[in-house]
Length: 544
Ligand code: VG1
Ligand code: CO
Image (spheres, rainbow, N blue to C red):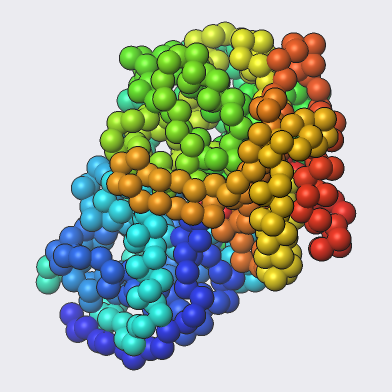
């Protein structure tokens, strides 16, 4: 095996965002672009010689080509072994599990998650560390720094690898193992949940299921788990074949993008349970017959009922949520006498808490829920958790959530996104918001007194590291909140996210439409950030 060094020059835009580096596919296809970033990662890691790297992606356009390049670079940089999902496929949570199970040094996951794929759409790459979780900020900062000074990358003259045949190949102290991407993950799920019980209830017809894989990575996983292992009717998993362009859609499991599933679940012959996942399989959307569960509520319901599933029969040590996620789970934690941590947006901030055993369950408002079994959010895991709950409780989804609201109150919640805003305009909006912060506390706005107005900073309780500028929060004395953030996963301009929540204890008002219930706060938020005046956009591009 011959190694070569290739001269290159830095690209100035290789700064990882909320979850890895995401760019238009054509940006990644530029000569040396992918190579530079991968070399910057390898250069930032210590003692990789002879170590194992896990590699896979969500199957989007450019996945296979990128995988061949990375194999050759891993060889030239001294890795001893690369474990790859067959066909170059691995869901994000499965990659996390495989890193942990094989005690690998780390892994590279090729995905832009819920962003669309194809030659004119998005591609992405993220590095996960040895605990299976997304690289913490100190790593991603180092990758970026290195990318700014890089002058060469190393690559081996190897023939392209057959990615489609399971087995081990290689020599010269460098081997490649192609594994079935589903088996290990399916095995883990069977350890965590009561498969026999779920299977029995599905067999009795009491649960009918529709899962939308959105032409993305979870298709093969969901087929195996729901149809083969749990006995759901053939065809329960729809859009089950991963496609390079996800069938032209956004593989984003929400009511706006998973329309086919939403129409079924709100239609006349709806099954009792519906769910969907995203491009790389780490998000989940949960639906009952005629009923949508917000991700923030889902996290709270799972926390309140955790002891009903085998994995958590002894209870939870604590829980965590990202800052913009609603406070519904806080109420459960308080009632159960367990700690609840508030972290910045992005799964990388949960890793230390999970490793330290401070929490076992965590989630985000952006359709992400997960636990201590891996170090990524996990879409199918969340769906199985709900199925296990439905099997034990024998009640429909909407009853479970209504019962939860009766006990804890409802945190009425919505997120409004304004996409593709020019970057300077978006920055202007934040400057304008920052200027107002000192004067807001004590003012009465939309009938509520402002309790605090600040910019969220987080100090990690385990390693003490501080993350600043994680979103602007305006909290009211009645518990309501408005949060403003800029997205860190987009590839065109900036996306302004406005998160709104209001707490409602009156049971008679629990069935209100969220947009109506939040109408006053929505107007107030728009005024505070002057979104219409500054962007010309009168309404959000996506509401979830
Ligand atoms: C978004 C979500 C965030 C999530 C991130 C990655 O980030 O808001 O909660 O962790 O996507 O999810 P941002 O910076 O655009 O708001 V995924 O499934 O795209 O890896
Ligand atoms: Co994702």
